[in-house]
Length: 259
Ligand SMILES: Cc1cc2nc3c(=O)[nH]c(=O)nc-3n(C[C@H](O)[C@H](O)[C@H](O)COP(=O)(O)OP(=O)(O)OC[C@H]3O[C@@H](n4cnc5c(N)ncnc54)[C@H](O)[C@@H]3O)c2cc1C
Image (cartoon, rainbow, N blue to C red; front, side, top):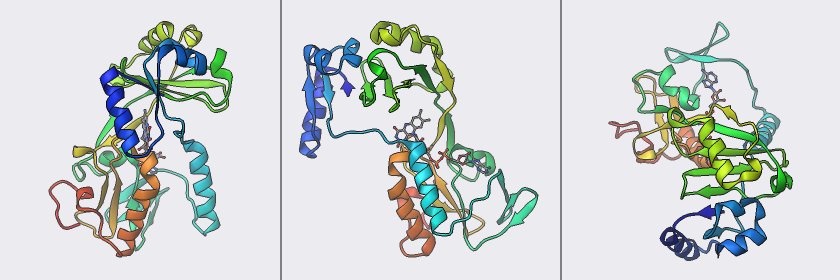
């Protein structure tokens, strides 16, 4: 469910309809009747009946199980570059191809070698109450006040995020937002959870070779939107590593034109 100015909603409805995406504008009265949990955010609103929420932890568990079934072996622990190889638990591991897909840790592991900047963007969680305890409540994007939220599918907690860098976020902002607009959650304890991503100039992904070691690859630079693109980005990475198709030039390290 999205909340925005009349002009923003009209533009968005037009765009979604052009793309054949179901979109339904709601006024305040309809919002109250159909989505009482979000009634305090007021209309106008835009419902996208075919939209959904990706459950990242479950998706990763499923991916891991499928990979294991195909023979992938998982080693736990912190890895560090060791020249063209990998240091892991005091051992040096080498391979015909090495991919560093470590999210926002990339610049720390390879200082000055990538154009990735780590960005902290924490999330806040409150225990669910009232209508939020019913499973299947919609996620919302509140463009008017600069917040978004995702009710847990188990009806136990609600994730609420001010759309600001972590340095500018505070639990008090979340509490005040809830008190004003979603009062059923207003008195609940707000818990902060660290989160962050890997920004890149222009917001494109990074898929490129280490400048000194052609068999070592950097993969990441999600700029806060990486999860939903995972399967498609993985296809690019698999093709590039197999030598089948070079990565899109826009995924190259800044200043490189020969990935
Ligand atoms: C508040 C917030 C909201 C977001 N919302 C969305 C959204 O709506 N839609 C969307 O698509 N994406 C969203 N994202 C972005 C999404 O979470 C990221 O794009 C995605 O997680 C990036 O995946 P990754 O594998 O590149 O990095 P990560 O998910 O950060 O994974 C990197 C992994 O590498 C591990 N690691 C790091 N260093 C080492 C090391 N030295 N040795 C071994 N392991 C290491 C880390 O522990 C971690 O497990 C959001 C992110 C945040 C913070």
